[in-house]
Length: 165
Image (cartoon, rainbow, N blue to C red; front, side, top):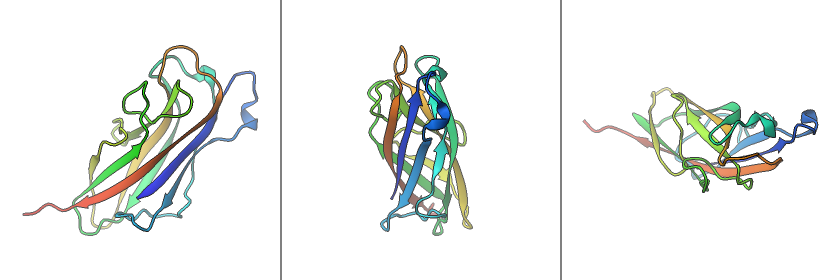
């Protein structure tokens, strides 16, 4: 199982964007992981710091960046991937943050929302597969978005499945 920690900031337009840290997605591989994810254990994917005025109402998103899982399946046909974390009370299928108006949304390479706790399935190749995802800030309530720090954590579990003939 891997852990992806999300942290970052949303700023008011009057503040300097260049002075603030970006959103960081930092997976750390655990020894009990069923799947092997290539790359360093402390791989970092950065989302930009965004202005609170970037949001245009509930459901609008900003700060999107790519996240790639490289899998080395052990003679499997399909990978079952489950991202688990605390879901937003305001927006179903989104990771909660300490800012009630903003969550973190994950989408797969087909632009489908990947909801926390709901497994998704992808065909894998015996020589390895690269699965593409995106992570974005998403406005989860109506009204203005306040500036502040954003953080969320998910665990990524990968199980391999083999079809029986």
